Amino acid sequence: MCTSIVEIARAQGMAKRGNEWFPLSQAVVAYDHARHAPLGDVITLDFINTDLDPGARAGVELTLETAKALRAALDRAIAAAELEETEVRGKGAALSLVRTA
Image 1 (cartoon, rainbow, N blue to C red):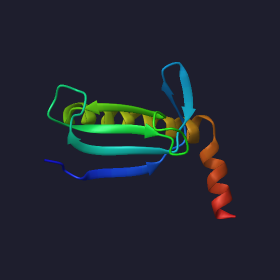
Image 2: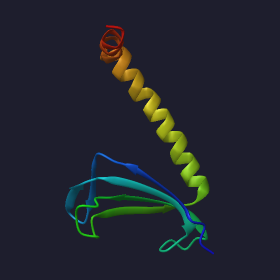
Image 3: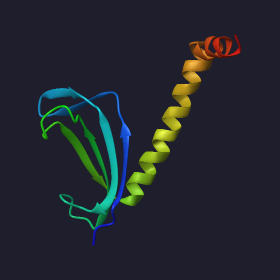
Image 4: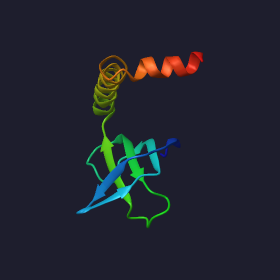
């Protein structure tokens, strides 16, 4: 049975198919039965470019446990990156000056 759980976000970045990299336009997150992995229901991540051919896609199917671990890893990496940007590179200070001006 299909769950109809789908979230779509704009995406900037690059993805790889075969030996070729292509720019991204969207990231799609869904929860449904696996199409390729020998699993039950999975979180599917699709990174696509809607302006290119349908093959402009990089996709993965993850168990819920793996998706949760990935989310936690992303949260830690994002927090560290934000710290790097604001405290180490000083970009946070410049942004706060712009906002208060």
